[in-house]
Length: 225
Image (spheres, rainbow, N blue to C red):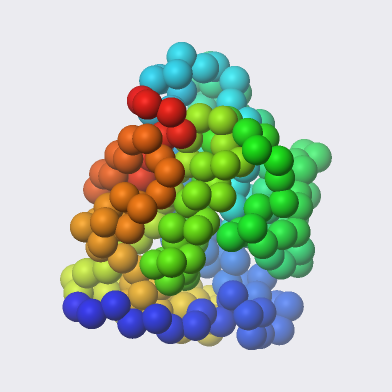
């Protein structure tokens, strides 16, 4: 299946405040039911295991309300790992303050932070929005901002995956989701394409794995893992 770049409605706030809120709620369900939270949790745990760290700071890029990193932080706390989360999203209206979590409105491909500001820079369901050149630029800027690793959690383009998305559309409330969910799969990258693009980054080691229900997880290590 050839990649087809399709603008997603949530990216451009193409809806009423109620429709956008419903779409963000749908996105939370997708991440809860179909591997979003579990994939990021696995990636962060791997960073903690390899570094021996029990306390990590994490910047979540294109975070929305931060549902994924907050769920991961709660889960890891029970395993003795403390995750201090900061949110970044282009649209301030997409972010909601939870327990005083720092939240910054900014550009994901020109991160407004100093070098080595966070242990981990993370994103979930973001990189499929980017062209190959933008993806490499984002990854390199994220590597600049992190101290240890960049973790990427995204969907994989596959005809069967697209079919499953269409079957699942009745589960979602927002018309934005009915457009954006298939669009996400159509413009997603395969594992092989992702690996090829990431070889152009400054990462010293790249770990790409397949996860539940057409998810891929990537760890870009800043220093040799």
